[in-house]
Length: 247
Image (tube, one colour):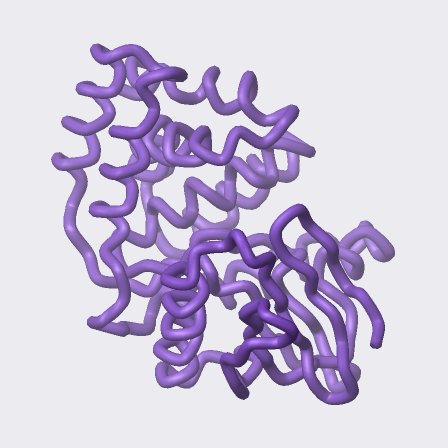
């Protein structure tokens, strides 16, 4: 068996035609079952994603088994062929538009999830800022688009025939697509601000979306990501949490 990714609470490995995501014994059972259920619901929309095969217990640890997809991530392809970045970025954006064209009424609601996360930030964000974030979030238009929650080129596999497959649906919700665009922008900006700006410019032009509309979501999305306390990201995200910036 080939280990693909190893993290503190999970190991992802290949076993023949399958990918197995195995969780530590400490990982909440409800979160694992919810992740599998979400993947099944997204699969039913017809989006190009690896098929869910089973949820099981292996040596006392819960595991989700999915179809293995051969290929390279879009992030690898972009890195290997930077001269064609615009072409790959357009392909990436087209996939995000496709995701957001789908509906899955039983998915968790994005606004509810973000409100919970903002409320949990008492040790990182002061009460006044949390109030402003909650107020802004409630004022944003309510939509029911499928939102991936971690849409970035590392989560797209291009198979040898050139077909895309979108992976890692553990954060999927239904809600306002601009929030998901803001999340993708921040993921790019963490590593390359120019590439982030290129992405946002291209997305807004292709979808006839005002950049200011996406920017209204940036403080909210940045705050929701602070919950993860990822080393190296906290200072970057806190700079975006200042809700005055795009008022």
